[in-house]
Picture 1 (cartoon, rainbow over the protein chains, first blue to last red):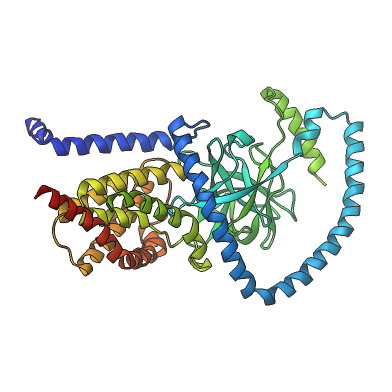
Picture 2: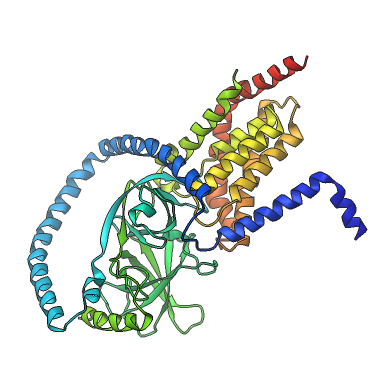
Amino acid sequence: MSELFRILRNRKLFVLLIVLIVFAAIMGFSLAQRDNLTWPENFIGDSVTFVQQWFYKPAGYLAGLFEDIRTMRDIYRENEELRLTVARYARDRVMYNRIELENERLKEALEFKERQKRMFDYEYVIAHVVAVSPDPLNPTFKINLGSTDGIKPDMAVVTTDGLVGLVSRVFPLYSTVMPITQLNSESGGARAISATALEHRESFGVIEDYDAQQGMLVMNRIPEDDPLAEGDVVITSGLGGVYPYGLVIGTVATRQVGDFGLTHTAYVKPAANFDKLAEVFVVVPPDLGEPPASDEDSAENPASEEEAP
Amino acid sequence: MKTKWVIPLTVLLFMLETTIVPWLIPEPMHGRIAPHFVFVAALYAGLYASRHAALLIGFIFGLLQDVVFYGHMLGVHTLLMASIAYLAGLLLEGKRVPMLAALAVIALCCFLYDAAAYGIYRVFRVTHEPFEFVLMHSIAPSLFLQTGFALAAYVPARRLFEAKEKKEADEED
């Protein structure tokens, strides 16, 4: 014991020890889910990002210009493909209008409550990416929407290709987005996205991990008799009520028996590109207020019936 | 005279590494090469100015990076940038470090920084990749970028920081 005190009498060592303890405490504390940040964090975060946005966008434009010249040839091919897509869209639009009208009528007939009707009215808010983190183990990026724009932690962020990430921390004017490549079932505040397939609506799985070595998302807890097959497009199922319904996540690359042999695990290739992002969309769910928990269940049931084909 | 340029130039480096450099990294290397220009600047401050300047630059800009890109947790970069830059200053401050030795020290410190950051994230269960994978996937390629930047910045950095020291020495005389 006296040995220990003699070591601690060395002032520098003592300071070092205190610093290490303080930092360990800060790290542990800041790891948790926090809805509101303190004012120094807000001030530093927002003022620095305010300056960063002057650099990121012009750099993006310049890089995009060179990219365009290089990919001139591809653009013709892409144009052809887009024309085909537009033709298909025009055809589907007619069908969609008819189905939407019918859906409205049926909801009226079944006496849906106002809250149930608005459940899937997601708002896609466009946001510009203003800075990218230089840490490969914490690869967040910043978007120019914050709590004053109604952004909350854990909102889904998508590009035109598919789901890119989840809002991580919200500052007043900007927020940080954590890419879905950071999903980790072992971490303390683990996020899991319940998923289903576009082709097989009855299939179910939970995306809660990312395998960086293969560059694939890991979809766990798939029932053995599930029809999910390779090449299926995986979308969010909206079950659990945290993440919206119907966002494209990726395509199934392989499916195999899971770790414990009871369920299956599928590897999903992400649809979105995480590199050189310029514009993303934040999916804002409709503001439904905060109903009691029992009300939530009754709201869920007719909706899931309606989803089933 | 030149001391007042240190902070604005480091701010510029911070802006560069968080906004423009990501656009320049080719797509196959996305998520693998990470610029630590500010950390290199802090190391130069430790080698050629004083360990306190290194501590200050490391602390301020580590804190900026932590708060601005607050994803998993706060404090990792503040602690590592400040402590490693201070350590480099403590060991080599005042010694006339030649260029190759300076580059070797910077490369070593960058490796230490990335490895320690990985260690902290691993302890807090933020990442679960094995170290061998992270070493080959991101730490090794980033090391080349850092060393390249250190080489490019050697002459201006030495001029900037040593001028400051010389001026102080003159004042003492």
